[in-house]
Amino acid sequence: RLKVPPAIAQFGRTLDKNTALQLFKLAVKYKPEDKSQKKDRLKKMAEEKAAGKTDSTFKKPFVLKYGINHITTLIEQKKTQLVVIAHDVDPVELVIFLPALCRKMDVPYCIVKGKARLGQLVHKKTATAVAFTNIKNEDKNEFAKLIEAIKANFNDRYEENRRHWGGGIMGIKHQHAEDQHRKAIAKEEAKKLG
Image (cartoon, rainbow, N blue to C red; front, top):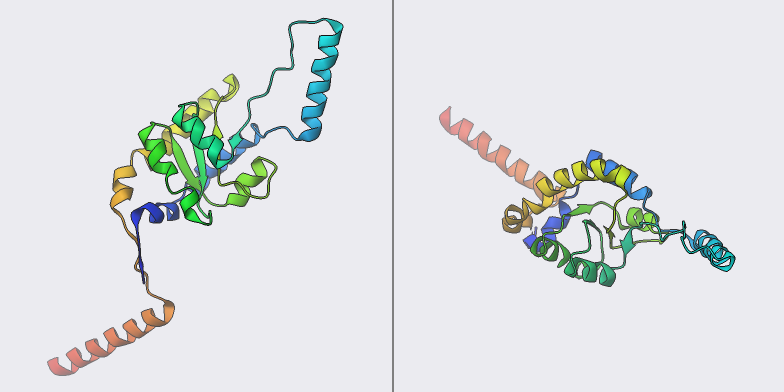
């Protein structure tokens, strides 16, 4: 029944299922390395360095960035190409400023369902937001199409979303009571007309 301010209500409008599926398929390719993978990479780099090779083939991989403070800094420095925000962050104040910041810095952003889904991408239980910073050449075409769809749904509709209040939905009992009241009024009108 309570009205929900637009800044909070925008988290109820998430990315559609098909686009979200494409996004998560792409994001899986950019999962950060886990501890064992990092250990192996650093070990091989150390072996190469010890052998005297200067040209290292084990460059740091392109990965998703996570952590709200880190992402905020990256957005402010305009180093992100896409920010993905979870819709169910509690308290919502942690991420409520991100859409406005992204729009101000002209960074594409989207809101997806499930902080746990974002957490799986970065080997954590939950993640409030993740960011793409660098994209591999083979994924650039797919990523560009994704960005286009996301911008149309979120960045370009920011002003429209800023005006829409949420909430105002009555409970199921109240809805039934309203229906009965409406039916009773309609019955009375029918009796009067004869």
